[in-house]
Image (cartoon, rainbow over all chains, first blue to last red; front, side, top):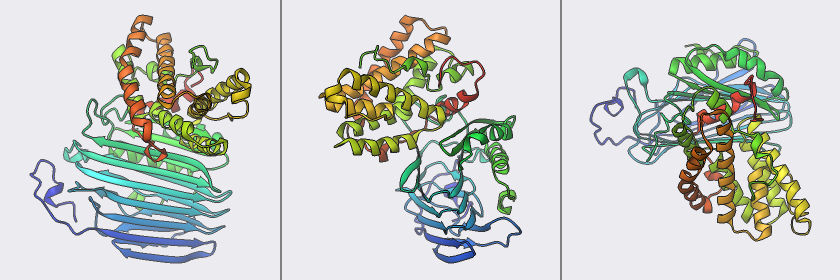
Amino acid sequence: MTDTLSIDRPGTPQPPVTLQRVRGRAAIVQAATGLRRLHQAGSAKILRPRTYGGPDQAVLINTAGGLTGGDRLDVSAEVDPGGALVVTSQTAERIYRSAGGAAQVRNRLTVGAGARLDWLPQETILFDGAALDRQLDVTLAGDARFLAAESFLFGRAAMGETIAKLALSDRWHIRRDGEPLYRDRLDLCLPRGGSDPLRDPAALAGHLGLGTVLMVTPDAEARTDGLRAAISGLEGLTSGVSGWDGKLLLRILARDGQALRRGLLAALGHVRDDPLPRVWHM
Amino acid sequence: MSPSYPVGAFAYSHGLETAISEEQITSADDLGGWLDRLLEAGGPRADAIFLTLAHTAPDFAARDALAAEVRAFAQGRERLLETDAQGTAFAATSRAVWPDRLGKALGDWPYPVAVGAAAARMGVDRDAACRLYLHGVISALIAAAVRFMPLGQTEGQRLLAARFAPIDALVEESRHLTLADVGGHAIMADLAALRHETQTTRIFRT
């Protein structure tokens, strides 16, 4: 699949297209001393760029170039006690119009005691007609440090596309030592009788970008003022920050993709000590 | 669930104080729409599910485990505060008023868990408990709004009456839902609750 398929161009008729189903599975295990295991199958690949200082990086690539209904992608990343890993993605993930069923994405992360994992995939772009069912399951042990940033773009505003049809379910489920630590689920389906969640003042209020940054850190409360300052004054953003019970949360609604990226870069630049993976600056 | 039940509901606005002061809500219609979104896709919808699960839970340990899950769903410090503080106050009063029936049955749980548990122990059916809880929550939010919006008491009651149908729909919908069904998209409402933490002039705790 590529961006130029006619089904992806707004305003053109939608011919019935039979696409080969995408299947991908990638798994990486990082030990304190470096890579312990790497597995990749189907359209899921992991690149390990050379890094200079900072933790090792794993860059996810979906060689299918996007996902549509019926596709399935499984990613797992595990960091052994004392290890550190930054996981990101090569490009934004595109969720194309579905001809039936949802694209299923299952991300499973495991972080051992004293270990650190940064989960920093780039934006997920939802095309008109997209159906995505995504789960992020995270298991933390003891004092594991964890940072996650995920973001959605609703339609490709640059191409004049607006979303009339969408089925999105995105679930976060983070547990620490077997206890629930953080849960969240975004459910957004269109069309919907009564109100349009993309425009409703209590829902997305016309914003095209949605970003979430969550950091599990013992000093979450003390970090709130700094994070608020780091993103304050950025144009095109409505945001909120809270720190409680060892969790630091930032939610962003952005006018467009550029504002979303500015907000994420500012926030991640502030909460992280080492430079962001290069793919974030391309 | 008498409106005079001392849970301190008057102290919490669920972010409404911010949404009104930032002029995202400027009229009775705006407020009505905002409340409808909360019932369809926000905190109150999740609460209806939590209350239902607490009502049907087999024992104290199951409700205690549910309480931990409910706390994990809180989107920010003040969202956790409003559900924990009201739940704790509800449980303390209920234990004191009905020591024989509720004395050992209620933990210091989030509000919908405590109410669901108490209702089950007192023989109040799930639908009735859920409807009363949602009426209580929506009434409290309207009462909060009346304090800093050009909105009269009568208009407030009219807004509440117009929510009876969506409340009934949620009572119906939530009857067989589970934690896997908790979800929504009231993002601006969530952001307002987060920004309330730093609002300079504030009357409400959330």
